[in-house]
Image (cartoon, chains in turn cyan, brown):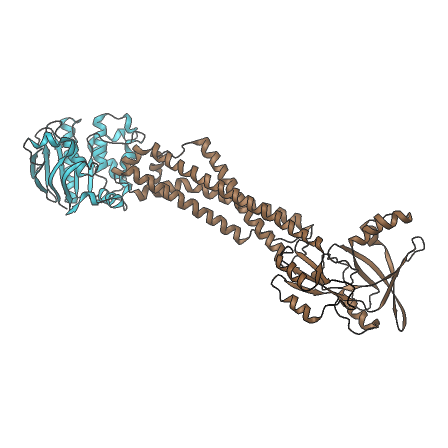
Length: 216
Length: 394
């Protein structure tokens, strides 16, 4: 499943972005299925905006986004839900967990959302153990630290089938050791699915074996 | 599992007290509609059902206008057939006269009386008094009789006071046998007469049809007599077509009988008022429920948006919310049906004493109305959930 962008620029940043060079904005770019894409950018240059536009959370842009040749705005409601359940998974920068649910329930919700389920419940425990958050699974997500929340959000994103995993500064609250563990888990899961990865970050990194690196 | 998690996320218990009040409103609305439906069905059964010993249905005794210009005021079979074919006539019963001389006298000297008498008979379906004693078979010396209520009233309030005699209750009259003497060419035959009931419908001394047929053959002095009057059963004694027909054909009936149509008017008004109040209440209840759906979705819109952005489909959310909202409505409709059934059962028990037969069960129309209301509730809830889920999901 390829993702194609043509002359894309977010309306609120249009003036600001038109006058500076970018590998993404106002270009014609294709993210080829199975590739590992790194998008690097400084704060305030639209990383999260790009992620939200690709995931169809924002519509305030000019240009086109096509998923497998289909214009993103034409995908609606139940089709969009199917896309998010089967093809696109996401780790939000702001995690977006349900504070009133426990860590485990947040992950379970994603596990049972798409039928048939991809993984049995015990896989959650295995991944949580791998990322060192097994002990907080029964805590309310709202009471977990940012670092813990980030790992919950990562495991949540891995509970479903996907062709692309989009991660928006996913390791910003983690130390190096935990980043390595998380990156390793993500790489394994992407490999299992032969899925592509789009990751945004502030700095250069070597967490993954990137196919392409873009400067936003 | 998904359902449990959604239950934790989406709080559907919003507006507690108001929701209870709306539920009570819905209950009253559905109850009124179903009661109106059941009442209408019962009423139709009473009016048109053949198994009923109904006195509400309209029976009219019809005869020719006696104006003194004609010797014979009897109805010909042609005239009776013509009457039978009118749309407002459901059934016609001919009254048969006795064709022999009859007299009645007291069996005791303490209350002496003597009177010349006559008998008439009519098919049983036209009689508003049904009584175990209302049978006669050949060889019986006791003849059951039905007399008009007016006879007793005339006696009690006119004759008895003027003669300084005791007034009599219906039960006393029914307990008193009278000696019936039938004169015939061969002599005199004596029977025992016993009043078994009082009628408001036919102003005559009625005896069982089979007795009169036998007696006319046995003692009759004249050939088959013409029918002088008939009883008709009609759905609507106030039908203008009936009045016009009677007038054009020189016929008349008892105007008092039109009071039955007043009962019908009252029942109609009650049914219509109950049904329209129910419908108005139902509309309000539907409005309030769609507001609750809207309120619930609005109050949890952030959570719903997050659910949708995680990939929850609007259909999944819609199914979940329907499962949250519909059971209460289904329970309300079920409780209403059970309540109407209990009322129906109680009404049946009560009316059986008034010799009115209705079914102890709910009518199919009532059940169908309940199903229709459930369908409307389902459609409105679904449409509202759908509308607001999609507006929140963007």
